[in-house]
Image 1 (cartoon, rainbow, N blue to C red):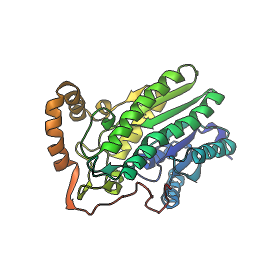
Image 2 (spheres, rainbow, N blue to C red):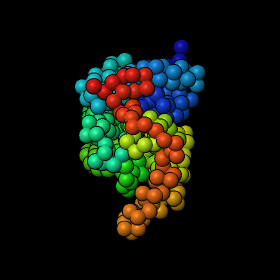
Image 3 (cartoon, rainbow, N blue to C red):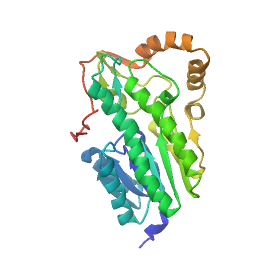
Image 4 (cartoon, rainbow, N blue to C red):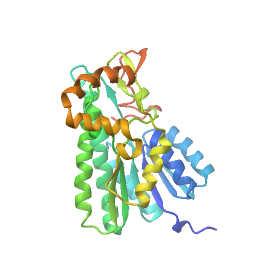
Length: 293
């Protein structure tokens, strides 16, 4: 029998699709012991089967809503009991909503911030406590270019990602006192994932990833690189190049011009041309029906 203890334990949130699923696949190929977390059991079970086929040393499926701090802490406790510790946590769980701030129902805005920002705090609180005790571990938080710039019709998501970037920086500063513990961020621009189509929308159409659009596998490789070579932020500039670099620079240097252009450009390239009825999307429930509340 192989010695499973030599394979790292990698916990991934949002593992049922998109960046989380691609990260699970990459780590499975490397023989990791995987813990897959998301709200919906059906999606997790499908990814677990894929990871076993790709060579994962072991796979555990743990449905959980990261916005529920006590529930996620129990998951982490179970992982430590089952595997003896956690080597890496990749936090990619997120939801999204489109609509002007005034037209977005308050409960939808609040839910997006709760999942995307407070959910990340719950993940950090639980995993960093384990890392501190075991004197090792790496938390990788998936941020966004929208943690550096602002865009209309995405107030909840932008608020969350700006807050997430600030939280990440504080965690990095505080982790310096714990040798062997690392906190990093991978902050991409648009990625070809289901989050846009599954988002809540109150603009009469669905969202879409604006170009340039990367594959989830590109982000998974960036995560792998930052784990192997710990650094603070593997950002949109480093991953995608000039277009996102220009957007971040324009937002900072010529904000008036940026604000003039971002609305029409986002409407043209960042939403679907097909009409769509207003919807809460998957903000409160996963595709399989698992609720936030």
